[in-house]
Image 1 (cartoon, rainbow, N blue to C red):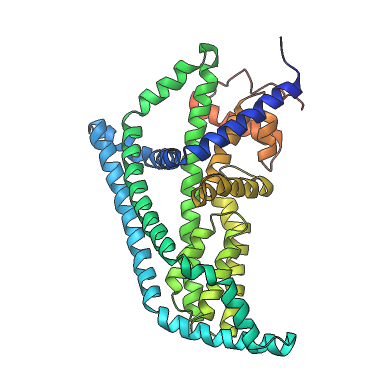
Image 2: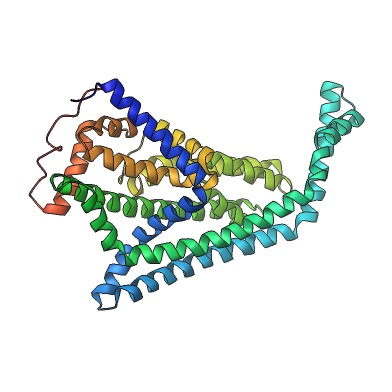
Length: 378
């Protein structure tokens, strides 16, 4: 007997709550594992190519992981060099920050009749606890660096094992479901692989383009630490809609603490906004948007939910996760309305996307169940 829709919806919401609870409780294990899955799918074409050259599967997986390690290490080294240059100029930054602070104090005194002594007293009260917890902050920083190192090691080990046992994992999914669902499971697995590979590669390409454009603009304006700020803004641009503005604010604040003038700060905002306009209307639709269309509301909600659940990694994992969920929902008749909710296109476009995956899987032969049936109304 089929349960009413309200009961089925309640079970689905309970499942979402359980998944969120498990994610929070076991995020130390799940975050590097999920990152390894994404990284493994990105390295899968290279591993398949090496295997076609008659290399053993273990050696092909190992070479792929080592290449990924070299790329990640190079990026970390370049960013670390920029950060070291930024930290070496901390005394100069403090001096310029003190000058701006005095200017703000005089403006507040003239505008609101609050003396500098009263302002200093309020500031001391607000920062009293920060001095007492300095050791705690240092300890947390060291612990964070240790976590990053452990995260990297475990992610690479997981990636190697996922590449090595990928056929076993695929057979596991086929064994879990009934034989009648084999075709649909194959479509979901292949569609998920295509989405992650294309979507993640598109995000990386977009990030490189935006970081390069931001760096060039900042260099032309004459902003100090242009490479560091340009790359950081490009990375933050992965976060939908709020990343670019967070990057602009951070760039403006850092520029204010250097010898940059207010005119240069204005040009920073104008230049980064122009790049953001070109990215939103031309780069992202062609490189990323063609992979999977996710509406703005779901993208923002997913990033916020990911940040609340597992912190900064959740913000970056939100978009590929929503993309995977959408391809799964589009493949299932019962879940197709949720796929429509996640996307910004029509149901017919969702059907065309799934049929495109099926053509890659089976050529002209289409999957008859699910794809040719209308979605159930909510």
